[in-house]
Image (tube, rainbow, N blue to C red; front, side, top):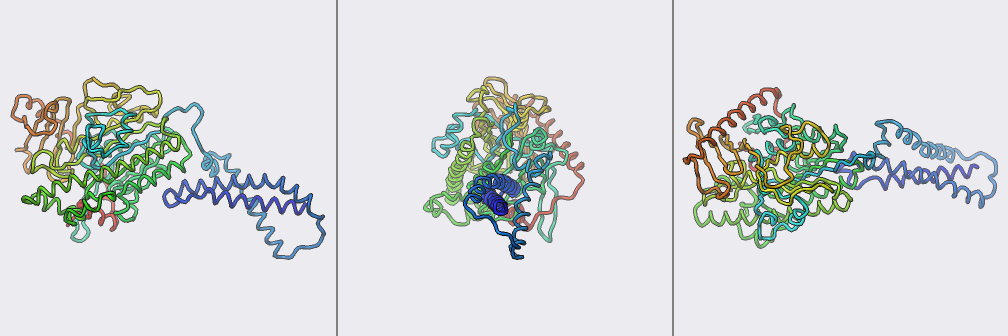
Amino acid sequence: MRGYIAVLKATAVLGLLIGAAAGASPWRQSWPGLSMLSAWRGAALGWLLGAGLAIPLGWVWLRRSPASVGGSSPLWRRVLGLGLTAVALAPVGLWLTIALPGGLLRRAMATGRAAGDSRPNIILITVEAFRPDRIGAYGATAGLTPNLDAFAREATRYESAYVSSSWTVPSLAAQLTGLSPSQCVVGPLARRTGSERTLSYVLAKGAPLLPEKLRRAGYATAAELTNNFLCSEGGWSRGFDCFRNESAEGGPLSELTLAQHVTERASEWLSLNRREPFFLWVHYFDPHVPYDSPDTPPGLRAQYPREWVAHRLVWLSEMRYAREPARSRYMEFCRRMYDQEVRYTDRWVGEMLKSIRAAGLYDRSLIAITADHGEELFDRTERGGVEHGHSMHEAVLWVPLLVKWPQRVQADAQIGQTVSVDDLQATFLHFAGVQGSRNNDPQGLPLRDGFRGDEVFAEWIYYGAEQTALITDDYKIIYDPGTDAATGKFQVYDRRTDREERHDLARSPVATDLRLRLQQLTRAALERRRLTTASYGARPPVLSDKAKRDLRSLGYIGR
């Protein structure tokens, strides 16, 4: 009997160790919480297997071993035996936690979905500064996006999707709340450290985020992001069970902005997560300046001055107003290098979609791919704008929107009417069975083409005086107050015939009603922003030195 007990202890401890080692994820630095649960699960199952193996192994031991002879064991053996006994019996306490609602093993063993829960997983993929006209599904012919083009063939393509702001924070905040930027973002909140002035932007405390609503509805929630603005200090981690933003956690910016790293971390979460339904948000940074894709051919990069890649401020302060032929070369550089970033991002978005398929999640998931804003590349004139946050023109507000619906959902392959990307929030909540979506619309995005589109109001630029815009199916009007709101300038464009915005109709009769409507919306937005900021009542978040360096390298902060 003593020998049998020894076998029982040995196999139980061995199973415990092997199970824990197998469960311990090599990605524990990425998702330590899930990795630890995986290790506990492996340890518990390994112990159970080891204890079960003790039965046949003990029987063999007793058949082949001579009867034990009495006598006391050495002290070291007795101490070792007590230690092994304690380790061998420890998982009994672990298994008892499976009876508790919040017990460790219950959480570790949680998998799949409750019986009868047919709600889809929801996966949101957003890409910084992403122009639709570089995507084959939107008519591009350069072949930069084979993976997105393949995805678009299985999705609904929204031809006229617009964001409600020209830069990241207000645009993504509106997408995750369904509110206007002036209702859900507070800022700029200025701080000074020595001679340096930093502008901080945070989510309004009362703005209900999509992950908060989905988590309350029983969804597991996770985010894999890269952008210093999207940090926990700014409120972006609210509602997420698992939140990761390496660019706000101290890693080198040169690695953190790469789509490869974002895809790898998000795919790791998929492999570790055992709960469904879930909401996963993946955010890519790469098409954002500076354009320096790892896949750019060395010969192409070598054609241009090194500082054009290394220092974004050179673009904004010098090359933007350079004379010929330097200016033409600079414009060519921006466009060619941007295209390389698009190609690189498509490659890793494709890998992300492969990971979703490999996990067996693709068919039963609602997957949306869109952008926070577009990117100006000298589109309107030879003196046209560059990058984003400076204007409300088409290249900045028009974004791709591809939505792959869950199985058995019927929708048109292409929808041409104007839609707001902010309606994604209501769409997700509808499919998650959550009430109270945006504007009392139970569904959000339309599933059928041919209806009258939305009016999309856009606000909040990053650089210079506030600008606003109103987009309808027929027209777009932009208000730029310049330095004096009383003498502000309006621009009106016919979206049916002038998507490139080259012919201003501000003096035509059609502009009168549009101008009055935009003035009303602009005044209301400014009042909302004032009230939102006043209600925040807190000091701005303190950015780390590393975060300041990264934002400075991107030209967002300076002296």
